[in-house]
Image 1 (tube, rainbow, N blue to C red):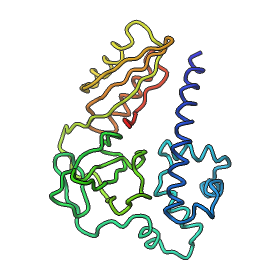
Image 2 (image 1 turned 120 degrees about the horizontal axis):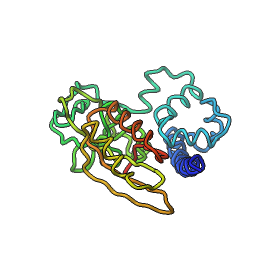
Image 3 (image 1 turned 135 degrees about the vertical axis):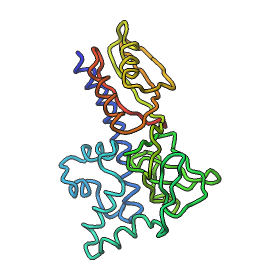
Image 4 (image 1 turned 90 degrees about the vertical axis):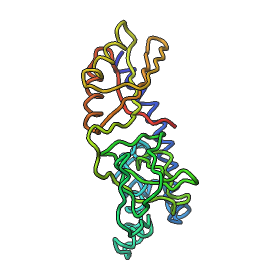
Length: 250
């Protein structure tokens, strides 16, 4: 029964990933002016996928990114282009030195003096591939590159190359996670005990139970990706837990 529940949740995630992946793929082809002349199956073949849905699901989950799609398509369709020309078509980063925002450890290409915010939709953490977006009046918003809200085909000139700079020790980042489990007495206590053992603070928690399936949503204060991976692994080992994963807040 546990495997059936796990399969059901994975099926829901897969359906969402396929829909999201299709949007990303079509936007990339539209940006390159190839949407009407190329089939989605053709692009999937470039990535050695036999089934289009498998390819779209991998895009939606972030395993295949928009920039990777653009690069591969250009390499296959425009072999005469140099690597530098391919990169110029995708994103044109500023050629100025990096400026580090000390408040969150993000380095930005040549944009000193701007307010820098970590996007609340995807909550990037040091170790995540990231990209910056110049907002109107709110400085630079830093997203994970696989964030569903990143759309390079629209206002692509507003995106900036950014990277993680020197981080202050014990600097914390809010990361939402979700735990799916069979409901039982002591479940929430066991989850929070594991988190406490790792000396991680919890800034928000919400529990919803339907038909004996509990969904626990928490926001953790994380310092590194390694710490996040460790805590998710430990939670998944708890009795009755089906899945523990990071989640986007869209």
